[in-house]
Length: 50
Picture 1 (cartoon, rainbow, N blue to C red):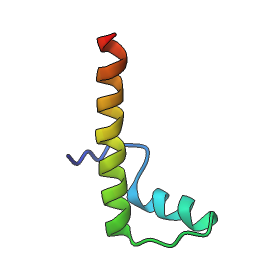
Picture 2 (picture 1 turned 30 degrees about the horizontal axis):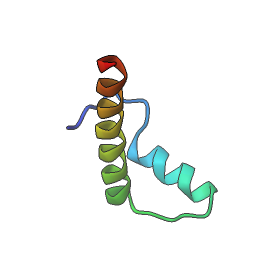
Picture 3 (picture 1 turned 120 degrees about the horizontal axis):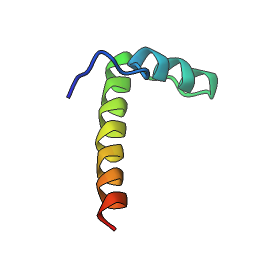
Picture 4 (picture 1 turned 180 degrees about the horizontal axis):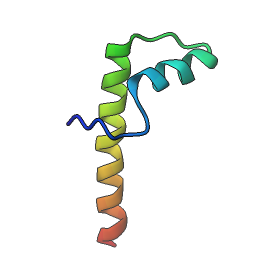
C-alpha cells in the first residue's frame, strides 16, 4: 500500500511528532502512515454505507 503522491510522508510524520515531543523512526512512521490510510478507507466506507 505505497503511493508516492501522498502529501503526508513518513518524514513529515516524524517531524510532526517530534514537535510534540514524540521521537519515532522513519520505519515506525511508515507503519503509522499505513494504519492512517487503512483507517481512513474504513471510515469512508462506513460513512458512505449509511
